[in-house]
Length: 89
Image 1 (tube, rainbow, N blue to C red):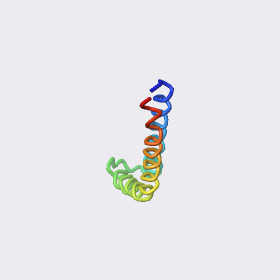
Image 2: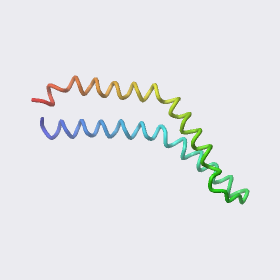
Image 3: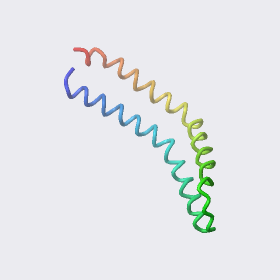
Image 4: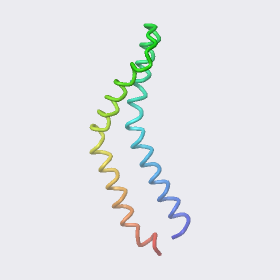
């Protein structure tokens, strides 16, 4: 296994994780921002107000993107198995 192959595999794995995490975090971030703007506009200083909408959006994003993320992980592992002889020798 050459360092180039290892670096390429590691880069692909990190890229996949980054995309999958962003698919879940970005909707939650946007909802948190909208709730924060609403709280600032109405002078509501309740810290727990943004928790429930962010939780619901995160769960919805998980349900919406679960199939896509599973497909992405399967493609990565199939690719990894195909490259296994190259990695071992």
